[in-house]
Length: 104
Image (tube, rainbow, N blue to C red; front, side):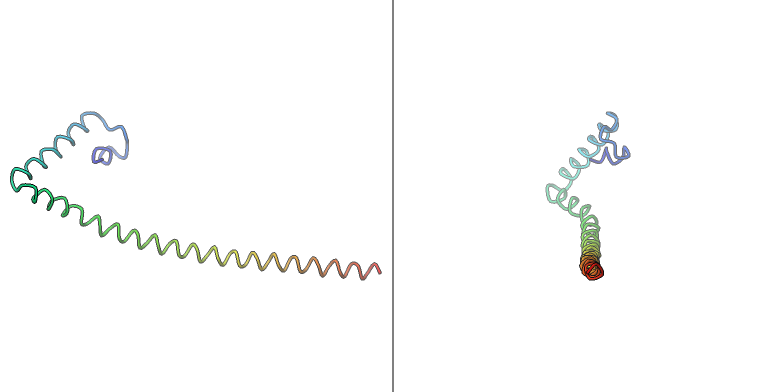
């Protein structure tokens, strides 16, 4: 994953770059396991993941607000469309009635 991010989003990152990141991640994990055991590795994973949690919560809130606004806008548009459609049909009925009266 990290190699595709550093490759600018390309799914096929250069082989050398993939090897570098795989070796680096393995070395960091090995050092953490040797130095502090599994708890150090777990603590490092949680510590690095915590900022992403905050960002994801903010993104979820923003998505919810955006969807609510979009729903409100579309609901109002549908109401306006229904109203215009009703007014058009009512106008057509009245015009037909007036035309019949003129012919009679």
